[in-house]
Structure formats: structure tokens, C-alpha cells
Amino acid sequence: MPAKAQEKQKLIDKEGKRIDGRNPDELRPIKIEVGVLSNADGSAYIEQGKCKILAGVYGPRETHPKHLALPDRALLQCRYHMAPFSVEERKSPAPSRREIELSKVIREALEPAVFLEYYPRTSIDLFIEVLQADGGTRGAAITMASLALADAGIPMKDLVVACAAGKVEGKLVLDLSDAEDKLGEADLPVAYMPTIDAVTLLQMDGNLTLEEFEQTVNMALNGCKQIYKIQKEALKAKYVALKEVAEE
Ligand code: CDP
Image 1: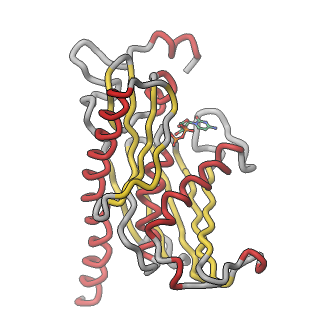
Image 2: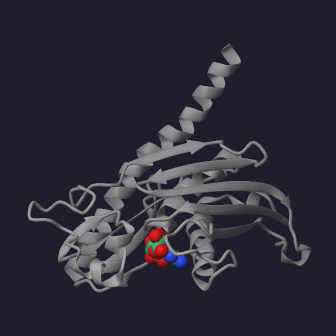
Image 3: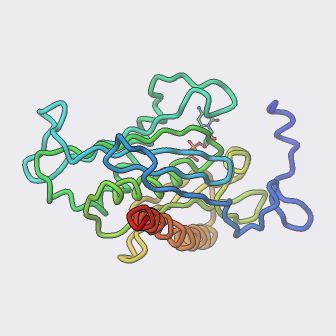
């Protein structure tokens, strides 16, 4: 959409509804599938609104390059990559600064959940491919990647679930879409381990008052708790499907 047309676009209508018809505290529709790649040790796929993201986990396996191996724990390596066709304007397939940063923040959000000390000198390799992006890809990627790790049988303290909240035209909103992220006043992604009640990622882009900040963090955590239920169902669904195949 041309920048001028976007500037005029109203993001919240008179009834308080957002451009995609959602209420301020409503998540986008979420669909998650676990175990979608047979060549990977673990995998998952998520659709969150228009975002479509896939992940494959390989390992624990021999570390490449070898000198990166850690004597006391596994090395978690993460690559977040956006397909050239994932956004409206063609994205170069080469890793951008943003993708290098997101690979790091996603790894750091997942690391506290994984018992890395069980697999010294090995590497756990996580590849995240964004097939279609529409805002909030880091959150959706974290939610889905923690399921791919669990699917690989890697012991974890909890699943990590992530979601953003922010401010758009003066209103606090949950799970921002791309237009809300770009044209809104603030975006605050949070990653969280619900059982342990621990936050593993907290970032903020834009401006909020202290009171708004607290409300936005709580809104994002509430979103995480809702997504956590969908996450657990997706993991269970894989084993129900396997049981049904075994019984046939
Ligand atoms: O995706 P997330 O919100 O975690 O990260 P961001 O850097 O805040 O990017 C917000 C959105 O901008 C992405 O989800 C994409 O929809 C969009 N984007 C884009 O259109 N072109 C790019 N080269 C990178 C991002």
C-alpha cells in the first residue's frame, strides 16, 4: 500500500474494532501443527492471522564448526529466515541485520527452557522459515519453535510462548498485525514460561507511559496464557494422531 494511503487508514473504528474486526484484547486466529517435517528430528508450523511460519529442529548432534562446541552443555543455534516471497516487497534471501538480530533474540528466549546441560559438546540446530509475514513473527516463531524442540524430544522445563501487545491510536491492543505495528505508537513483544512464571524476552519499540507499560505487559502475558492452551493442544494432537495410526 502506498505510504500516503496508509497514513490515512484508520486503525480503530468508531465501535472500537480494529482493521481486521478484532476487539482490542483479541488474538488473531491461531492454528498450530506439530511434526510436519519427516526429515527433521522435530518440527512445527504455525498460522497466526496471516503469518505462516515453519521450523525444523536437528539434534542434539555433532557441532559444526567443531570449535563452537561447549564442554558443559549443548549449543543452541537458531536461524530465523524470511522467504523472499514472505512480504509484499521482495526480501533479499541473504540474511539481513534484522534476521541476525531476531535469530539471537529467539535463541535467547528459548534457551532458559531447554536442559542444555544434558547434552554437552553437541549442537541443537533450529531453522525458522517465515513463509508469510504480517507482524509479530518473532512471537509466533518462539511459540512454534518451542513445540518443534519438544517434538524433537529435547527435555524442557516448560514450553515458551510469546505474544506482543502495544498501542494503536491511543488504545492498548493485543497481538499487533503488520499495519498496527508499523503505524501504531508502540509494540511490546513478550516471551513467557507459564508454569515457571518466568519472562524470557521483553522488548519494546515506541513510547508508553509507565502505567501503559504495565498494562501492556499484562495484556501480552494474558495473550501468552491463551496461546499456551493452543500450544499444549497442538502437542497432544500429534500423539493422538500417532495412537490412532498404531491402533488401525
Ligand atoms: O515480525 P516482528 O513484529 O517480530 O518483527 P518486526 O521487525 O517488528 O517486523 C514487523 C513486520 O514488518 C514483519 O512481521 C513483516 O510483516 C514486516 N516486514 C516487512 O514487511 N519486510 C521486511 N523486510 C521485514 C519485515
